[in-house]
Length: 220
Image (cartoon, rainbow, N blue to C red):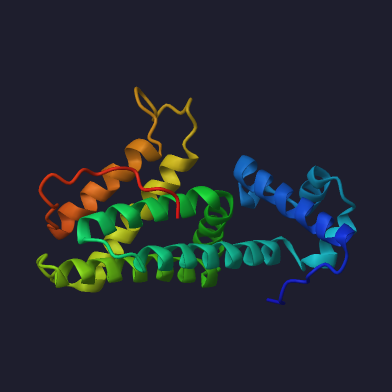
């Protein structure tokens, strides 16, 4: 796909940003596959022709937004991995970082998933998966170096953990409060992040330091 066209004027920047904001709203409200370019430009309050000044198509727009989201995700994970943390605390921190990355860009990332599963447009989906799996592999390696048992298959274990994190984030962040699946407790970050971190540490049999308390990590 072509590289994104950067606006040269303030008005151009405002128009492009309005289109991007409208696309995010429509993607999360109606689903990427159900949204049209005219619907996006109408919601943005812009002429339809202005869309094609910056994007070749709806798919091109999603690719641009996905690339930006994945770059942010990778940078977020790098900041976590740069911290000096014992393995269980690192799992807590990375789990929170995954949650925050999905929460920040959920409309775009869900759209990438929809496109990949339906149309087999896998480039963005593959890159997103690689970013998460690579981060999980690094956390797991540090846990093993600190004394946790080595998994039988490092990559299969990391991919399983990454799938658990991704699927849970997709489901819980997009779940409507009035969904029939939500009974007594909607799962938000306060409950979801510690639950996922506990499952990750249990899968790797990572010991938690005596007296250490798990808490919701601050945004990265």
